[in-house]
Image (cartoon, rainbow, N blue to C red; front, side, top):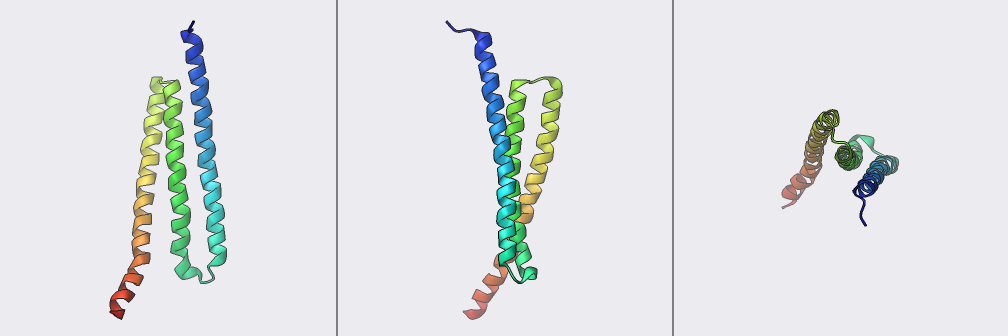
Length: 126
C-alpha cells in the first residue's frame, strides 16, 4: 500500500523542486526588473527628475525577488529542520525582512515625493 519512507522521499523531492522554482522566479524578477529599469533609463532623457522613477522601478522588482527568496528559504527548512538550519533560516529571514521593510519604506517615500509636485500643481491651478 503506502510506504511512509517513499512518501516522505517524494515529498522532499517535491519541496526541493518547488524551492528551485521559487529561486528561479526570484532570479527572473531581478533580471526582468533590471531590463525594465534599463529600458526606462534609456527612455528618460532628463536624468535628474527621472532618477527617482528609475529607483522605484528597480526597487519594486528587488522587493518581489526578496519575497520569493524568503519563501524558498522557508521551504528548504521544512525539509531539513535541524537546529542549525532553523538558526540559519531565522538569520536569513531577519536580514531579508529588514531589507524588504526598509526598501519598501524608501520606495513609499520616493513615490510620495514624486506625487507631491503633481499635487502642488493641482492646488495652484484651482
